[in-house]
Length: 329
Image (cartoon, rainbow, N blue to C red; front, side, top):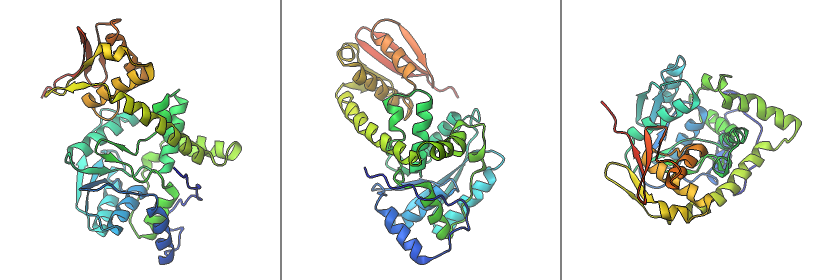
């Protein structure tokens, strides 16, 4: 993967001059790095510049897509909803607005609630487009490194997971902001992205600029390149893990053989557990500690363990069972 140079940031709606030639040039440059999946499309339209640019690119390619705006029910959410309405109206897109009420205002809780809403308001054969950029990738990788990550964390945001696609991972945020501005789309900056309570915002606003100013001016490019190299290794391990048979029952539980798991090298057996967890509870397989707890059950060192999301892991004979607690209405 060729990593484009990080261009100078565009930080306002009005800084670029609305030059049609620049729009054409920018579109041609970005289009080389963006491939939308075939079939019916749903775009997660936040009201910000990234998703506005993604929506504009879809219409420029004459792709028909529905837009879904997830309203986080925060003080500034009405402002973002209004921007999403304006963008979808200008582009002629149908828009569904979905209010959510996360259990907490943590990054993880809001992300999980957002993905649940997008899943609930799309069909299994829909490709859901999220507008993560190369900057998001760099920030995610650095965030994961600060927490002491493994290969999964170094690989960062996957280009695809299930029905979710991220075709803008090779495009920089400054490019999407310029494109959305020159296209005359009424996007807004989400005030939540400036809230210093969230570690990701401090990484974006403080840590990366400091590291680039004092240590490595091409830090973001290097982080994106590292994620690409790590993903190539990760894909190989995932393909090896996929050879291990596992059975999914009608109730969504997953079974696999403990003996087969024990015969695998640790980097592959941990992938098998992660694949099982994704089948049971969705795209986020969980932390390494959860994987190790499941492997202890498989190895007979524990009879049962409970993981986040109501997932239980138990062993019966040679069967390792991953099950999710039934929802209570």
